[in-house]
Length: 215
Image (cartoon, rainbow, N blue to C red):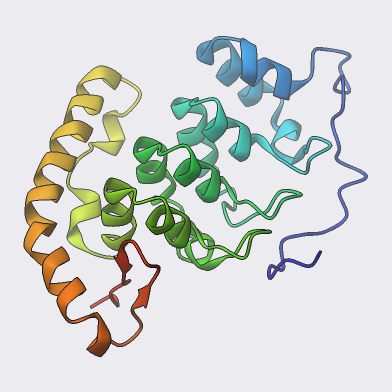
């Protein structure tokens, strides 16, 4: 199976199956079962693990999304790690966040310079993240992905203070979606009614999806 990405390459030198070079527990096992402070401390002192992949070609970005390690995810994004990287099934971390309906992870992934690329990549089922969300009628996720490139996706969170006040940021996240739902209610009706004349729109049979251009 061939995926439309330049980011699939030979992983043999970087596969971390059971233990790392220090004979410690695999970093992927740590992400699954250890507390996040311990994980971050280990990763920061062993930066070589940033380039490790498991046997399914998933790296730390995939794991941070799958196991909801948001501080780790933020750290990896700050390290300019490419999120447009596909695992063995063609899924990027963004695909996984959408599948899990994890709008919090999606908001963090939006900080990455490679988010626009990840948004367009198709997985092994030939679906982009937006197409997955639309097919599943995930209105929150569709609205959020549509908001990329607008002022909306910078409103809800104080990224500089993300680690210091986690619970407060989650409340801002909740308020953001309440506001976004209100803002897009009329816009949804407009898109559905005029989908046949909107350039670039695609009807999935459930939710009409359209990514606006950056202004």
